[in-house]
Image 1 (cartoon, rainbow, N blue to C red):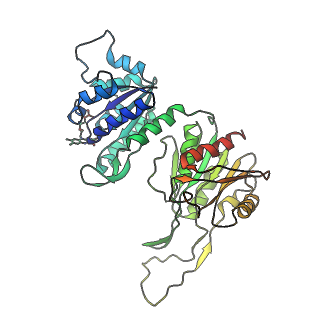
Image 2 (cartoon, rainbow, N blue to C red):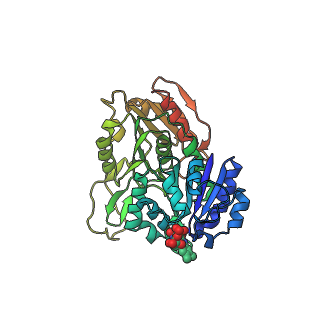
Image 3 (tube, rainbow, N blue to C red):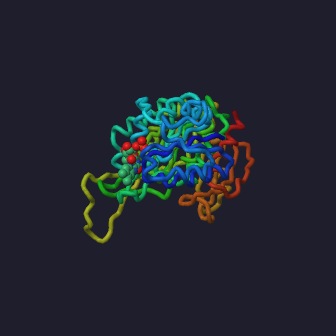
Length: 395
Ligand SMILES: Cc1cc2nc3c(=O)[nH]c(=O)nc-3n(C[C@H](O)[C@H](O)[C@H](O)COP(=O)(O)O)c2cc1C
């Protein structure tokens, strides 16, 4: 894999050295383009030593070989990764400005190489309407984004805008490059996360679902070429593939409505969310006061989403999840039958390394024909591909 790594003027440029090291460790060839402002944060010498190639910085530097360098770099690259990507370089790409080596190479690479930005910036800058607009336009021109994570930023603020760790970026880049496109033309509807059932303007009932499993499945399907709609309740701050259409919802009723709105066109429905089974019967418009020694809440049953789409599912594949604490086999098979599922992935959430908070999981996958298979413990990412392999076999 040939990677042109563009480094622009962000404090996160120090992480680029590690990106080069990790890419080279996995066998990639890496050539670096450093913007003039990027050179304020990391030296050419460091990057040249790590990449074993001269670093391109100045468009009009003395030509060492006959090629026009920005064109030859764009032709050479399988991927142009800009990490860190400043608001400035994203804006230039979105508007077609080509006034230095990196922006010119990016323009020459459109339609030739995959273009990926890993933004790094202050939260205000990241969330600004201009930057969001530019990111959207860049996507329309074929670029993809590794969304930044939340945390403490170099400026001391806490929020979104921190570039992902080099190891995550390199893994995601390889996933992107190596992914088979075996799900092209298939439409997936995936639910993820917990719902929030409000009691009053400040309190709500929810559960421990992190959304990791559902988002991993949605990401894996999108990487393999599927058109994916993700209906997401409350989730942890997890990177969602930029090709996924995300519908954010709050309550179990919202999720019910969103599923019914989008399921008609889906070839596969994967219900990995944890919608609440019960919701407060009454919502108090005012904050409930701390009067008396106890508060009795009356809850009413929510609509059963999986059951509501069980009939008339036609050839659509329905996959459910069952998080159990006992009688895994019996409960999973009962749910599979009651909800007319093609498969159900059951996991014992009391097992170490499995369930809500972990990055790993292990499931027993039960099929409608009575057979079942154990995945063994693996990362939620790998498990998502394992599950999708079983779904892909059905097409
Ligand atoms: C200390 C310092 C840190 C900066 N960090 C960022 C950053 O993380 N993200 C960003 O978009 N701009 C950041 N900037 C501003 C950019 O360097 C500036 O917009 C510059 O014009 C970007 O040029 P380039 O995109 O050609 O590299 C920073 C500036 C300074 C002085």
